[in-house]
Amino acid sequence: MKCPICKKEVRFGAPLMPFCSERCRLIDLGNWSDETYRIPVEQAAPKEEAESDE
Image (cartoon, rainbow, N blue to C red; front, side, top):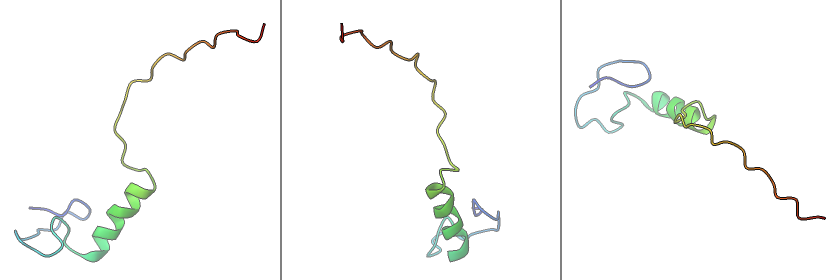
C-alpha cells in the first residue's frame, strides 16, 4: 500500500497505516480542516421567497 500523501510504500499493519509517518498523517488532517477535500454536489436552484410582508 502507498501513503496517500507522499506515495511511499507502507507495510500492512504499520502503526500509522495508511500513512507512512506522523508528518503525512498531520498533512492529511490539515487538508480536511482546510476543506481541501470536497465531495462534489449539484447545486439546487434557489428557492424564491414568498412575499408574506404585504
